[in-house]
Length: 87
Image (cartoon, rainbow, N blue to C red; front, side, top):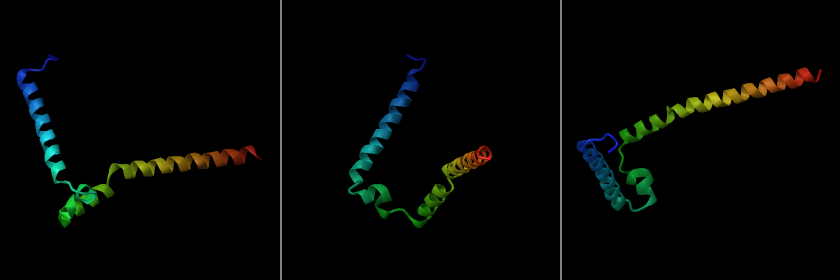
């Protein structure tokens, strides 16, 4: 079956069972939106610091900055073209 051995299939089934088990276990512990979004405010200062640092230094910031600079460059080029054509 798709070139998978019996051991491969068992590992995949075990993986999905563990993931579903974690989902069921965590869904029983969540009582409110605060529990979901803030982990019940049970995270320590160290974990919050690393999470904030990771969010602030993500790759999206660099991508967004590059996109804004590209848009600004196109706008500048269009203004120069418009000025050259109006002369």
